[in-house]
Length: 110
Image 1 (cartoon, one colour):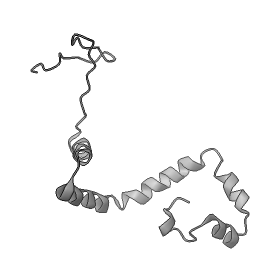
Image 2: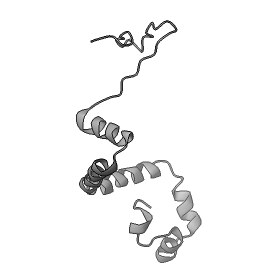
Image 3: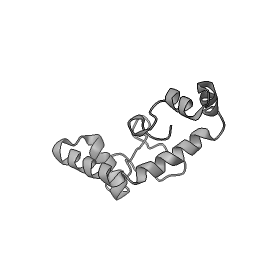
Image 4: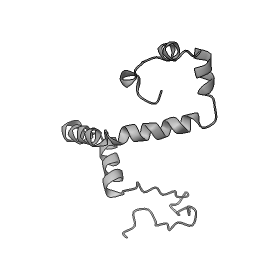
């Protein structure tokens, strides 16, 4: 359950139930228990840590070959702590303050 299907052995819940002598309904009910998916998420994180460098290399190769705007944005967010600036303005261009944040007039020079 915590591994992607192609990496699981046995691959399917039905096979798992048969091997371990439990009913499929038992497994289905177990997945509904509080905390089950939180534990699965933790296992996913551990599984993914070992593969992150390979994923990052493929991501880099993809950006160099045919990167999209979303790819570049993700790269900047991850490696450069960049955050897209958003600004809300009223009609007439007056800024709308956002939770006590500083606002600048549109097209102003910092």
